[in-house]
Length: 138
Image (cartoon, rainbow, N blue to C red; front, top):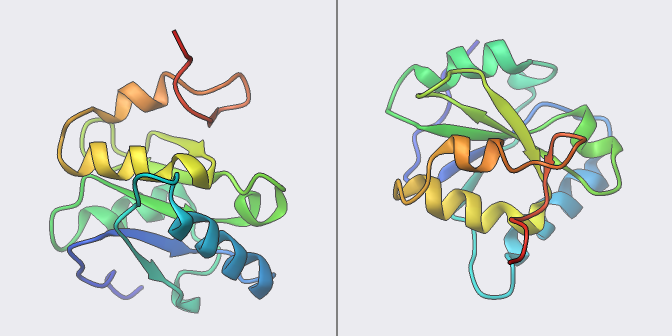
């Protein structure tokens, strides 16, 4: 499998190619940000990565330039109406993952990129279904 592209932005890797319209919709949702902040991401839309799972994503993400995490748009992301994107830790607990709705991507990407928060802060704040929809108010 070829190496991931180098980027100063966080990578969003497409691993499901079943629905081009859904992929485009998900990218627009991520790009929309949360109204105040935006995720600095680079999209990897290459069939070379079709169907790869967390173990392979982790191994691939840990090769090459240093990355602390990556995002993946897999079958669950495409099939679920909320489009929960897979977030994979590459440093502290390599392979640990959770899902996040696109609206929450800016907070995750921004905070993890500058080490303002740790992966575990988000991973331990998911809802019962394993999806991060934001921190509880209060």
